[in-house]
Image (cartoon, rainbow, N blue to C red; front, top):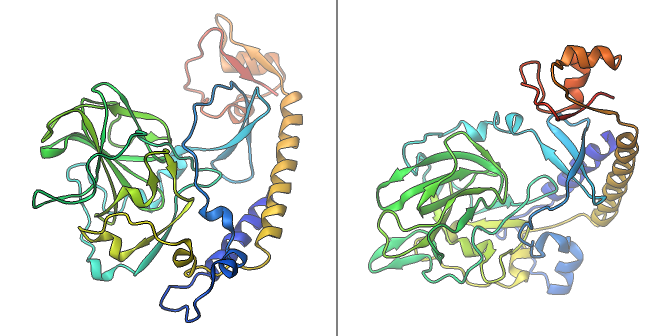
Length: 358
């Protein structure tokens, strides 16, 4: 696992040290040259998250604090992070208020010309909030700025969180009606407005694909629809820069947010991949590093599977306590709690619950 962390850090360092702004890059590269320089997987569409019908078998700790590996009964696995650890990051405390949609005082002139945002990775998934054709686009509409896109839906339809994050605002707010705002680790905020019901509260941690509310027509609205906004430092930009709503796919795992996108009339216009790639310069060892990381992940998964096979579980019976269970199985309460994320000495044990003891 240490090797995995090292390789992941190395890969990020290689990419980060190779980033150049469009102004800094003097030589215009061709499409074929760009494909050689930049890892293509960064720009491939990312499909919307599908519901996981598999049942979790076990949760294995990794050497990274707050990161666990969840094993499923269909022989798949994924990383899971402890929301309590993530929520302590500065991004979830700076300019944080549940009272107004825009708590920022950042001047547009102070923002860099280009901001690179990682939207998804092995720990962060994506779910299209509502896969529909956009019927009202971003930009000026009837001489009034429309800071998002409108997606048709029926009152009561589920509305999903696009990415994992922490709920900063959940209330009825003026023209927005019932509004939920989720802040994400990369600084992006997503707004979900005109909801008929809100299913989350301020401070809640939500995962991608979690239902945060139901579609409706509250606030200044002429019919049921979802008003969706994407903002950075309080400035709105067209969500279609990152999402293809007709397919439901994320356009890429990395997004280059340009300052010009933050203009009120900067609607999504497909740009050539060549233009997007001119701000990147990747090390030729990128594929080798990616292959090494994949090999480490595979080895870790195989090791975790073996550990899971040797695991021992007990079923809670009437009168059981953690102390009694620990004594019967020759272990300690502390050890049992470590093997069962979320289990503490204060947890009420329900009859029939399975607990890992070894």
